[in-house]
Length: 262
Ligand code: MN
Image 1 (cartoon, rainbow, N blue to C red):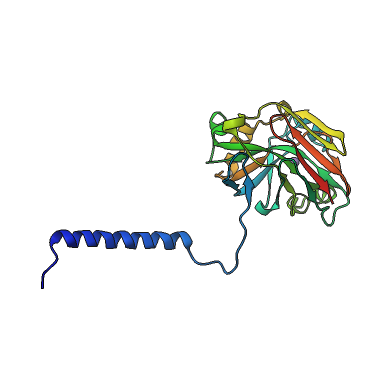
Image 2 (image 1 turned 180 degrees about the horizontal axis):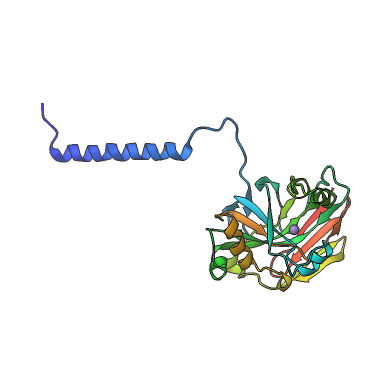
């Protein structure tokens, strides 16, 4: 019987090894199979068919001096503080839509907070302010919806805020605009109207901590990664909504975002 020559042995050996490596890689990627499916949270991107996969939602508190004062604190003495919402708290709102937003359970004082949202394409720890914006993929208009009565009650009792801030659909969001197209947002009008009456009306220049500073500060406490989004705080004149109210949110340079409380 003819023996395979050396060249044939080497070739088939290499192919076998390549095949084994490919199989191992596929198994490593798949891992053990989940016993049930869990939906991924994604955000549409304007002008793209691909979507933005969400890893974490960070929010900054009291980042406009006048809002900090209306919440009863002194903005000149406070470093930024952060809280999180669960990833699946996002309610995506399409451009031009007036999305139904159900009034949540348990609260009798449900508040709007219009905010600029920054979406990260990369991250790290201890990010310098000067490099921070390099990690931003894009921006969106957001609403940090809040059960104010429950947030305050928990705060008064020195208990966690989750029930007031981190409930289903509490993170309302328009689509993401790539910063490559819009540039970064250090200034520009930000406003919110209820049934046509302007309630919040400020400018991004009034933020105490800029988006770059927020990223830098956050990265001291948490390792930031691609897919993280940051709600950058709301201006003054937050207030309650009731069923039937239509909220219209505007940030200069981004399309309007609107919901109806149902
Ligand atoms: Mn907020």
